[in-house]
Image 1 (cartoon, rainbow, N blue to C red):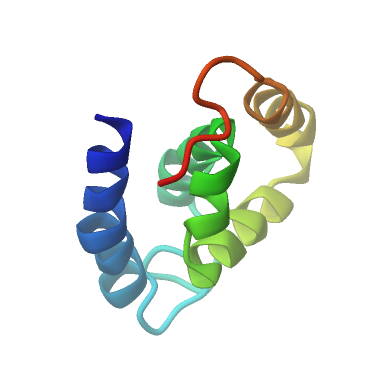
Image 2 (image 1 turned 90 degrees about the horizontal axis):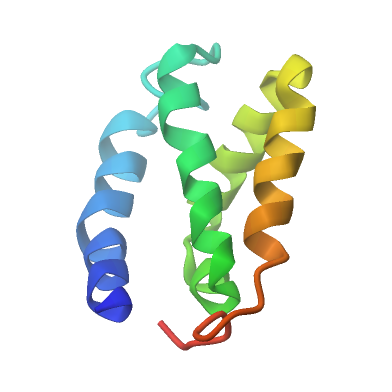
Length: 98
């Protein structure tokens, strides 16, 4: 089921993110980060719980994720905690192929 849902992310949602929301801008519809980016980018971190899934995320999406997290330095502690929970998970399926 995770593979099927990831395929939908790959085929539909990532394309919409890249080709619509980030088409000509660094952030969602803007070259300046906004609260909209805080609604999107941190959620992408959950994909890191499956390492090989994160490896398959398009580079443009990863770059967007990185840019948003860097744009809000006051939340670094929170973002790092979320990242640590996801990348530190080693349960069943963490190394599954997408």
